[in-house]
Image (cartoon, rainbow, N blue to C red; front, top):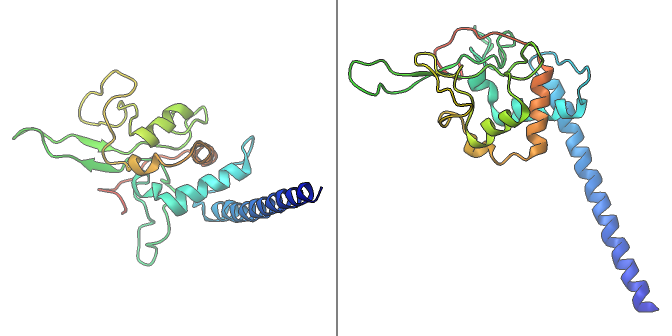
Length: 201
């Protein structure tokens, strides 16, 4: 009887510890959701969207991943003293150029421009389904139709690696993180690229 009681006490202690740990993680996640909503450089539209996912997605995009560095052209508000303020007018609208070496002498170098990840007319980020978005972020593949500006794109849905995107790091996001980023991108306003000559301007 004492052995059973001792076992029951141990199980209850473990369950209590797990519950306390879970509550503290939930509190920490909750504060990051709120922080994500605070730091979004654009107003988010939460109609029919999950507020917690939008906030967490904003936290990942704006505090942890630096997505705007390559997907906003220009990245920062131009002018003195505003270097830290993200450009809300062209936020996540892509258009940042990445030049590659010319394949042969005399030929022009292909130019890759970052994709517009703002919602399209259907409200879909960059016109990508969640599966396409997940594939781009975790495997470095996307449709190349809009990416290459000087050469015709392959007709296949996915072709080639996006060598400039750090997808080898982003592949460590779990599906919940990716779904939250996607949800955040659905919540931001549509935008068009501005003018810039490279990332981080």
